[in-house]
Image (cartoon, rainbow, N blue to C red; front, side, top):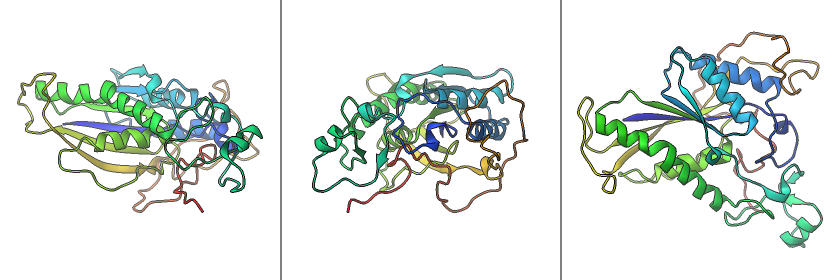
Length: 293
C-alpha cells in the first residue's frame, strides 16, 4: 500500500483578483507564502518519498516550502506539466462572471471579451481546455506519476511509500476522481472539490492481495486490481491560526528578500467542512458547487 497526498498551492496574487487564472503564472502572495511555510512545518515529521509539482510558480513555490521542511535526506522534487491547472485560453487574466446572459450565445460573450462560467464539461474558452480535456490530462498524471509507485511497492513488499503532488484545485479534483474510478470495490458518488489554499487530500492505494513484507509477482500487462480509499479531504489545520498581514502586505507578491514578519503556527483540527475562505476567486467553478439557473 502507498499513500498519496494531493496539495493545493498557497494563495497567489491572481487569487486576489476576479480573473480566470489557469496557466497564468502568478507567484504566491506574502500570505500564500505564510501558508506554504505552515504547510511545510505541518509535514516536517511526515517523511515523503518524492514530491511532484506543477511548474507554475504558485505550486512550485509551495512545493519548495514543503520540501525545505523535510528532514535529510530530502525527497526529490520533480516538475511535471501534467499537474498544471486547467488552461482557460483566451479567458486567462480576464474577468469572470457566474452567469451567462440568456439572450446571447457563448460566442457573442467571447466576442465582447466576456467569459462566464462554463457549465458543460465539454465546453472550453477559445484556445483553452475543457473539463473533459483536464480529466484526460489528470488521468495521464495518475498513470505516469502515481500508479508506478503503487505497483512497484507491491512488487517489493513495502508500504513505506508516501508521494505528494502539489497542484491546483480543478486539477486535483480530476486526479482524485481518476484514482477513485480505479477502485475495485466500486465508486462512491462524491465530489472532490473544495480545497482551500494549501489544503490537502489523502488517498491510499493497495494492490489487491498484497501483504506487508511479501513481494508480489505480476506482469506489466496484467496488473492486479486496486483498492483505493480517500482518507482525508480539505485538511487545513495548519493555516487555521494564520492571519493576513495588515497594511496590504499580505496581498503583495512574496519577495524572498523581505524579512519574515510573523511566525507560523498550525491550527486546531476542523471536524466539519468549512467554507473556502481562502478560495481562488479566479477559478469561479473551482471550490463552489454551481447550479445553472
